[in-house]
Length: 199
Ligand code: CO
Image (tube, rainbow, N blue to C red; front, side, top):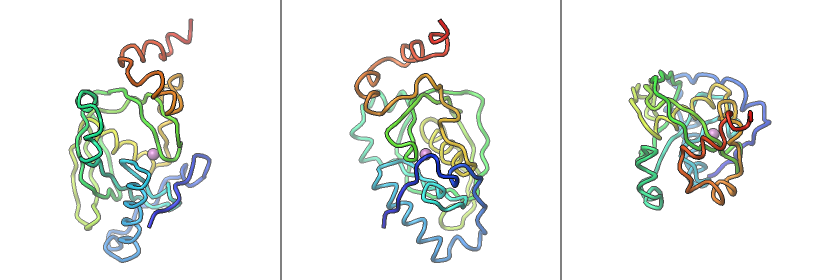
């Protein structure tokens, strides 16, 4: 079953989600919720979805970056963004530690539909959380997977990428594809950087 993804402006997207009781993870309502979140993420399609995005103020997110969909992306771009397959898993009650190095790429969100912008994110993160089998896990992630984790955990704290974006780079996905997709990142940063706008 797929659920309606709420758009920016809904208060639930701006509140800190409540931690889930660990003993509830394996209970049918939460297992069903995780399943519906997975279906909704796949249908979108997206690589992550947080419970507040479907109106549920709980600290649950699902993540999946499917190998079959990555095959349609230019391998050079996958290498530049350090993106590779991530099997489906849930992230419950996470705590995150950010590495010092940051990298900047275009990012979008199912709750800010049809837009994107440059967002600087830590290249590496460590996340401690529970998974959908109620197992405690420690995730060491880098590259695009680290970005997905930061984006989804932001959702659980009431943050959206627009709070962190380089605002002059905000654009429709359509115009990104039309004008910027093949422009080198250094050139994009030069043209859409704060320095240029100040002139
Ligand atoms: Co999002």
